[in-house]
Each structure stands twice: as C-alpha cells, then as structure tokens.
Length: 373
Image (tube, rainbow, N blue to C red; front, side, top):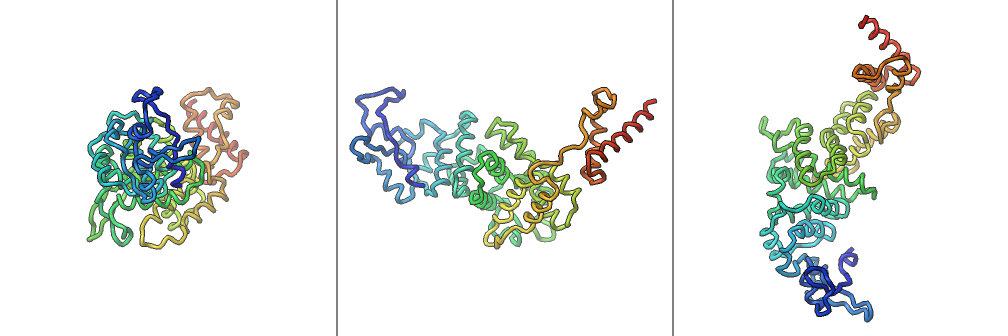
C-alpha cells in the first residue's frame, strides 16, 4: 500500500502550472503537500529523486508536510486525514500545528467530499483519520461530530469509552468489511459515521447509569445537517438517513423474535436490510474489548428477510395506480389512501398474491363509491 502512495513523475512547472525549464525537482517537491508525495522517478535512469526525505518518512510511517507552502491549499488537511487512515501514518507534530492554523470554510463541497470519500472507501484505520481531524482542530467546523467527543456511555455496554471513540472503532470495523461496491460502501460508511449523532441530545443518567433512549430517531436531524455540510448529493443522503434512524432494529427485532410483518415494514423504511445489517454489525463490534464473535441478530434478520424476498428491496406492491385506472377511477389524491390500504394489507400478510390484492381492491373501491353517493 505504501508503494502505491509514494512514486510520482514530477514535471517542472511554475506556480501557475505552466512548463518551467528552470524549475528543479527540489522546487517542484516544495509545492507538493506531503513529503511522501514529493518524490519523483527519472524515467530514463530509474533514479529516485527524493529531496525532502519522503522515503524515510514512509518507512517510519510518518506524515510530514513538504514545506510552508502547504498552507496554500487548506484542503490538504483533509487529504492528510484520509492518508493517515489509508496508510496508517503518524502525523508529525509540526504538520498538525500547521494544520491547526488553517480553516476550510471556503472550500467547495465537491472537493471536501472527495477527501471524505477516500477516507471511507480507502481507509484502513478510519478512526485514526478522524483523530487527525480532531488534533488539527477541524472538528470545530463539524459540530455534529465534535459533540460526540467525551459524550459518556454506560461502561457495561461500551467499555471503549465515549461516543467519539466508539464511532472510530465502528468505522474501523466497517473498513474491514467493505464489499468493493463503491456506492454501497459509501452509503453504509456514512451511516456508520452518523449512527450515534443523536446521543449527545439524548444522553442522561438514570439510576446511576448513562442511557440514551431514542438516540436512533434523534440522530436523523444532526445526520442530515452534517451530511449537508459535506455534500449536495441529496439522493445519497436520502439513502443514509433511514439507516441511522433504524440502526438498532436488527437487535430489537431479533430480541422480540418479530414476525414477517415487522420485517417487511423495516424493509419499507430502510430500503435495503442488507445495508442496515452492515451498519448494525459495525455498531455491535465497535466496542472493544467486548468480544466480536459473529452477529446473531444480523444473521437472523438476513435469513428471514431473504426468505421473504426483502433483503435488498421492500416488497413490490401488488396493486398499482394503473389498476385503479383500469377500474374507471380518475387519477387524483384519492388514489393514495386506496393504494396504501392495499399495500398495508400486503405488508401485514393479509394478502399474499396479486389476485388476493385485486379482490381487496375491489372491496375497497366498492366501499369508497358507496360513501360518495
């Protein structure tokens, strides 16, 4: 992994990016972000040109800024975050100090989110990357995450410490279980990042214990706010929020040994139960030193969702709007309640085929017509 990071073919350019025949590898290296990205390879001789000792920094797993010109682009702080996580580097104290003097409020969201994507999709030790962000003071710009720092948890269930520490561990678990589907991994990674954002607002002591009842539902609003700071991809955010809201559901349904109707309702709320189980598994396993031997609740839920055909999508409605049109109904607001009633019967298992659903539709329409006479 280090080799993928290290070698670059540097072209001598000036500050505007134009060809500069008087530039040297040394002057080009000083314009780079970190020493590990400031090496070059002579394509004719194969010589490694390393004016800033980037190779020794790599061997020491040290992240060090190339020069004071690092400050020209504050995005480099976020690049440091994801490099620390991807290559398990230790940032030099001088680099952290320099980063603390920078702020990224004016950075375009697409550039910001690009680095967060790298963190979640390529990071090996994502918690380490988050701690770099904390050390540099950049959590101040992300108050939803900053609120997790020192937010207490019951040590019986969370011996690892505060919610911030727990979130880092959860993301490390997630990193070890990515499925190499970038969109799926991004959705799940963002949900793991956000899953406990509701705890600061709901944590209290009761009978001498820390509790955070309702933090799953309370986490939706701060998750939406945080993600809006990072990206304008509203469709992506819309797929993350239900996973935050229902991240406790796998354990709750397993404990109650819930039936098919509850599992179908869950599929309707979250879209993909397989995503939800990944989030819940990371949550359960991100509590060292508690043992992380499997996830029975997740296995149970996946098995039942699979048998019901709702592992990766909610039930397909047996009745659609076109069925009402075929029966002489005029499209309009009245369609919604009728379709919802038929779909709810399907979710509850009161109808188990399209034929049964259409019979129910006829009954519902007949009653509706009698009421309007």
